Image (cartoon, rainbow, N blue to C red):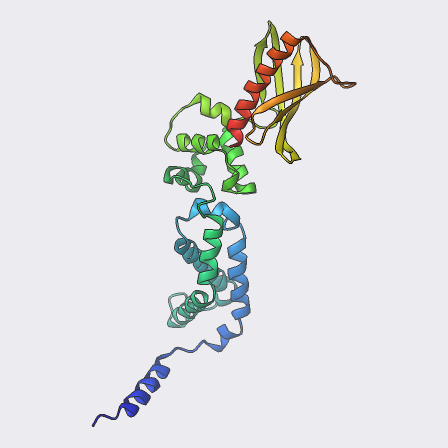
Length: 280
């Protein structure tokens, strides 16, 4: 009869012999490996939702974090070892196993927390310009550089539809003046139009929430007409539709006749519509 107990013990003994043990040198440096993984995970360019630009999936992101962490470990702690040697291969595989077992789920979750369906998806054409095409940008391309800075500082979810469309067009060498114009709106942007035979200019400053219940916003800036300067505030509903405005001359709020007030309101509604397109 077959001695199943003997076979079981024999298999376990062989498996234990084939399990590679971590080298004492690496064991003493596991804390530094933890540090390198955590540092890589949360530092630029891997920090926040910027990872959605560079990586298509959580697995791809995990592999990159792991490789970068191991590279750092080599240059900081293993550079005395030939990177073609069996000793380094042993250490490399040990670190791969360690990172996979301890961090894989955490890193992949970090990716999907930042790049879930709630975040703004990017077409591959946009990924290309952000990932590879930055070096080809004209140094004077202020709008593109401003959008890239916005992504770097605030993440992909901060982009408006017009800014996404602009980058998509840019990556395909498509010119769309309307999209470019809307995407250009930022502090200092000027809106110009004729208001009842007067040149009207609104210089945009910012948009902020000014009421919580119901939610309302306000656009602020400077307004010039007929040689006079006013501080202008446009009030919007939660969908950013302008419903009223105020003009202040520095001393008090000013009012005009009903007909001119209606012309001003039409102007500020048009300004508000363009700002809205830039914000959503």
